[in-house]
Image (cartoon, rainbow, N blue to C red; front, side, top):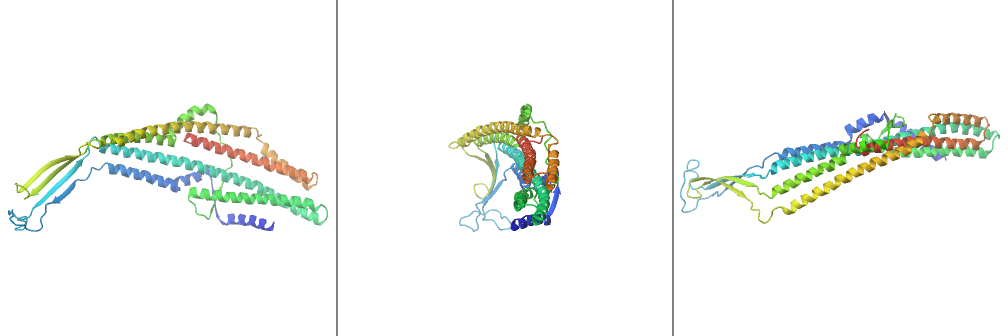
Length: 420
């Protein structure tokens, strides 16, 4: 028992020693948007995609080649005019410049493909943000829920410790039985054990929130917000409107639609690739033929006899079909998720509406009354303990209901793809 008490107070002191950061939900989200590593990485992916667009706009570089250079004199050579003074009278040299010209609009289509990939990375950023915001908000709700639970148990521990000390004095004077004292002490230790469990749960939540907000390990985040019920009309009458919003704004649907565009543009490129590019050349030859200084032009191209890119074209057509299926799947998934979130919210809301507005306040007043009557020995320990258990159970039910309403509302926003 002593070790349990030491453990409780050890955790409390550890939390007190660390630098506590008090903040609201909005402040946490602001820090998250500016500092989160996953968001920063995804923004860099967008910059990389834009760099690929820039690269795609460049024409292929021309190729310069030098050949037929003799470093020594051969026999029976016709002398030519010197290149520098008398040097070079027996030297031969050839030079050629080649320039590839892409046909069938390949360059333009590749630029358009890269621009589609930029849009894809932007939609990926929205999807990463959507996922992380939902997780962040769930963690914040869990932390606030944990803080409220701790407050309930701390208040009861503070009260029951006073009762236990009073009963210990009564026991030493022989006014009560040891069984009554043990029963009260057992309840005190049970509350402390539950508080320890809450501290342990909070430690894991602190690890998560600090990862979201990029905070050092010695920080302890405390949220000043209450566990409020979302003030929003949630009903199936909004299903059609929210489903339409999801189709227009939900990132995974936008990603799928963008992938369809990407697949269509890739098909255009693959069809263009069956048309060979042209290579234009201009060449100079000194002493290599009947002319002393020969300048000529040329053109080259692949002959599309054996390979007309049929396999890649067929694969691109299949990719269009696959991306269309993915789009339809995501749209159906969005509608199902919105419907499920609405129904879960409504079920929990019905429970919350059954709780009277002043019910929680009445519970607190009744607890004070029972504690007073217990001190005055007007009610038995059994009656007091029964009501204390009922009190805590009901306080937790109210907290659970508020937490679930927040989580289901966030699930709905996640399903719609934007804040409501």
